[in-house]
Structure formats: structure tokens, C-alpha cells
Image (cartoon, rainbow, N blue to C red; front, side):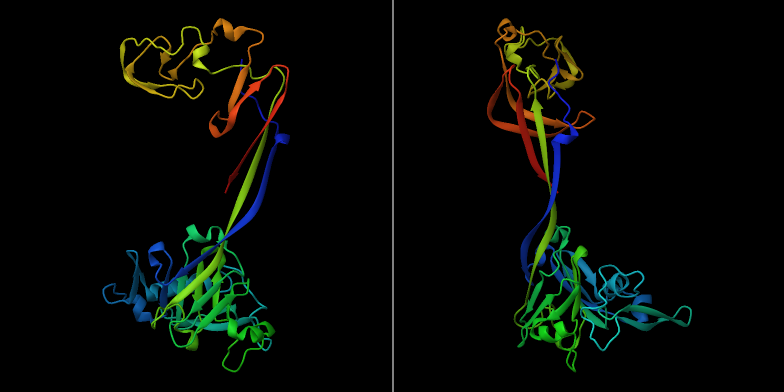
Length: 356
């Protein structure tokens, strides 16, 4: 008799939902993997004749980040060319009404002694210097939740509070009205001061001037970053139906003839044997063999004692295992107490668990 049964596809339900968790880090949390690094464009000579020993760098938790190469990496990924940049591209929010959504700029090619023209969004402007903030994926999950970022810097006499607009742009809360109206002041207060790349956990402060010290840990105090992580949870529900007179097989060793709990050990063998999950044997054997053992494990036999063959004998269900098509155990649901498997009654069990 089998003690396994296929589950109908109609009895499998998978529901997905998004969960968020709030994290807060400050400039002293570098040991967690959260850090900020200055970015410097440098010159062509900085790249062609790069010297590790003399190059400016920042070290966190044993990892060194060189300012010039890191700048080039961030530039190539997110800023250099609109045709290849990562992240959501905003052509409306953060763009002043008096400006175009796309900016054209020249890029020199020293090796070819030529210049080529590239384009990038108005909201993606990387200047000579910037500041990179990196958040480890173990904290942001699938992505930083858009609209959840608050970056507060009070390292100098002025306190800056920056938020994201849910579209990858950072703005100064003090100028939120002019930012929303897309009419920045003469000194560009109220425009985009940085960018967020939610899926990568990357934040870049691009605006220089007043914001050049934000997240740089300069001054007496520091900065704090608050954000929400994003993780998709899949709730899996399996309805397991035991029909009348089904799954009456037992795996209890004590109900087998000659297997009441004592075992006779036979001749010495060189291999190590252990029982399989089906027979419920929890121990390892090393160097022994009986007629009930083979290289695949301990076989408990099939003959039941007399009491277990009575018409009124019933098994009890203590746990439910879910297997794949390769007969591999994937999950186990344990019952709070054994449930009698009455031959004349049908039972329904619901196994529910979450995965990400």
C-alpha cells in the first residue's frame, strides 16, 4: 500500500504580495556594508597612469574604493549615455518647465583625437565631483521602495533633508514647492540634487555647491539615511485530501513482525548505513549489517503484527510531506497532535508556507 498521493493542480494556490521594512543607517554603520564614497572625475592622466599607492581612496570593512575609478564606473552605468544607462529615466518630474528633458553634451576621445556627442536626461547630470551612497542588497531586498528615502545631513551649520520623488530623483525638502512646480530659483534650489537607482541600492548626490558636503561625513555631526526595503513573498497553499480508506499504511517500526524495537546486528561491513526517511529510522549505523540492511538504508519489512491487521485498526497522521516529481522531499508540515485516519471518513489538510 502506498502512503503517497498526487495533489491535484486545482488544490494548489500560490499568492504573491509585497512586503516592506524600514531601515535607518547613519555614517557610523560602515561595518554593516552601508557606506558613502566621494566620486572624482579626475583627468585622463589619472586613468592612463593610475597608481594605487598615490590614488585617493576610501576603505570600509577591509574593501578599498578608489575615487576616480569609482566615478568612472558610476558614470558609465548611470550617466554617460541615454542609450545604455541603467535605471528609470524621468523626462518630466525634476525637469524645469523652461528646459528640455534631454541634454546633449560632447565627449572627447583622446585616443582618436576626436569628439563625439552623447545625450542624457536633464535629471541625470554628473559633474566633476559627486558622492556615492551604497546600500547592501541584504537590506533593500529586491529594491529600495520608491518614495521612501529620507537623507538627513547635519554635519555642518546647515541641515539638509533630501527625499526622493518616487521616480529616481532626489530633491531638497526645503524647496519642495518649487520642485513640485518645476520652477527652480536662480541658484537652482528646487531642482534635482541627486539620483536613486532603486534596484541597485545606489544613491548619488550629484549637485555641487551647497550640497557638496552631504553624506561626506565632513563636519562635527554626520548623516542619516532612512528607506524601506522591498521583498515579494509567495504564499503557497496545498490542499491535501485523504479519501475514505486511503493512506492506511503505517511507518511505525514497532508494528512490524520481529521489529519491536530490538535489532540483531550481523557481520562487519566497511560501509556506513543509515535508515531512509520512509522507514523513520533516525540513527546512523557504521560497520554493521543485517539481512534487513542494504546499501540504500534500513528496510523495516512489510508484515504487520496481528493487532495491526484488525478491521478496526486505524492509523494516525502525524505529519505531511510535500515531494516533487523526482521524489525529493521539499517541505514537511507537522500536526499539533496525531489525527486518526478513520477508514470511513475523508480528511482534508491545508499545508501553507511562505517563500521569497
